[in-house]
Amino acid sequence: MPAYKPTTINASLFPDGDTAEDERVEHAPGDASKANKRRWGLKKAPKTGRMMRNLGDEGEERPDEKAPPSTQPSTRRSSLTAVNAQDTLDSEKAEKGQGSERPKAEGLDGYDKNKIVLVQFEEGDPENPLNWSRARKWVITILLDAMTVMIGLSTTAYSSGIGSMTEEFGVANVVGQIGMTTFNATCAIAPLFLAPLCELVGRREIYLGAYLCFTLIFILLALSPNITGILIGRALSGLFGCVGTILVGGTLADIWNTRDRGLPMSTFTFSAIFGTVAAPIYCGYIDQAIGWRWIEWIHMIASGVLLVLEIFLLKETRGAKILAQRAKKLRKETGRNNIRAPIELENESVKDLLKTSCTKSFILLVREPTILAFGLWIAYAWFLTFLFLSAIPLAFQHTSRAWPEGNSGLPYIALVIGCFIGFGTSRWTDSIYDRKRADNNGVPVPEYRLWGAMYFAWLMPAGLFIFSFTQYGFVHWMGPMVALVLILVGIYHIFNATYNYTSDYTPENASSAIAGQGLLRNLAGAASPLFANQMFRGMGYQYAGLLLSLVASLAIPLPYLLFRFGERIRAKSKFASSNEALEKERTTDENVDERPRIAREATYSGSFV
Image (cartoon, rainbow, N blue to C red; front, top):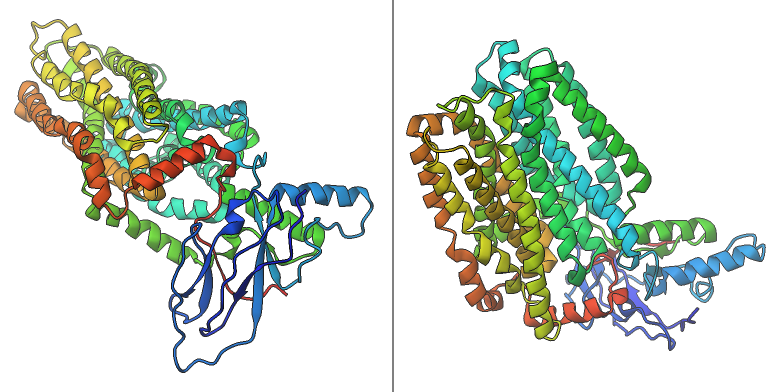
């Protein structure tokens, strides 16, 4: 393993504000950890007046803040050094083989116990999720896609049993539709609180805990004696089920670099939309044959089987959490309490994380017109998705076509076909992105993500127009079926473009931006079932569909405008990625082993004695 010089970054920690001189870290030849060469600055801790050390970007200098005149300097000092996780692990195992009474990691002996030893990933570290084998990455991706499908199926399977459920409870159909609304409403708000918990406890615990609760709630829904229990159960389902739509994108970013992320993101988009539209195909027959309660029981059994697979096969993907586990193990086996992972140096409380998570999403929506525009676009697409989940049975069952209740779910097959076509065409547009990126010397350009939207998003308003005027009884039922295929292909590419463009537009704030867009999307989905019946019956199927088509047409120019002016917009944005950052991303993708999966900032105060 590489040897480390005892030269460290002197980081004086003062209780009420002092000053200290910074030094560069010096390493022996062979040390490849870029994170160890970062510059340290000094800033004042919020509210306490305490001075903290902050780990900034490489080469970034931050001006020192002066201490208040009334404070007295403190002489307490601490220092920080860095050691690679794999080096310490290998050395620790070697020491164990020599029968050491207290195993010590090589490279730690030369440091004072009051010095912080920072655990990092080294180049090629097998514990770094970006360095995992493709097989392992695909196992995790498929597990998360399966979870997304199951959550999506349960979202809309409920709608197939609303008629018989409301009849059993003696309430109006619109009351049963509120269950769709409560699911989407809690699914919109919950990610703002679950995302900060991922920062603290990692992704695996959040996934398993939330999915376990989601699975158990099926029991409440299946056994509920009244509509109140149903509505409460649906709200709780949305609260825990949001992990299948909001958190998966961040997990895929943990294990796939930008160059290879196209196909995994496409499978996730497919899973999210397929799960949402497929359930009514078979749930109508379940409702007719054995009753609406068995819709919930069957989905509970399927979710339970998947939960068992997740428990055994799903691994932690958040690099900061993996480093924290490594540091904890080293502390236990060496007896050195000064070994720390970057995330353990942070002083943010749960309250601060929640505040940041909630406010940042709204800030990005308000201050970034591009993020807001895509948020409104995807919100309208999701609004239409849930509107048609309620309107399709009306169009085929309660019109002159008069299809029986079981068969009224068959038109959803057209939506599934559209989903498969959307997935296939997205692979083609991804190949265009790869080719354009290669022509640009490997530098990723966010606007290259818009090809799919430019080619196919217009199919959504076109399909709506066709659906509107194929509702006459003398028109063959294949007419609206073709329209539904076109609508879904357009929706698919709107989703794909929104997630991919937003992630590339502001990579440092992608989670917050997507959470804000998800809030708009799910709130729109929550509202649409409440007036689908009244809208289509009151305005007529033709004119209701025409109105929806005209509104959807307003967004057609968006991808073209961003493709033409996107670079200029990003240059003026405070949050968007700069050309320098995109060039750095190219370098990162060429040598992904060197990208540390750690917190961007780390602060430390206190003593490790």
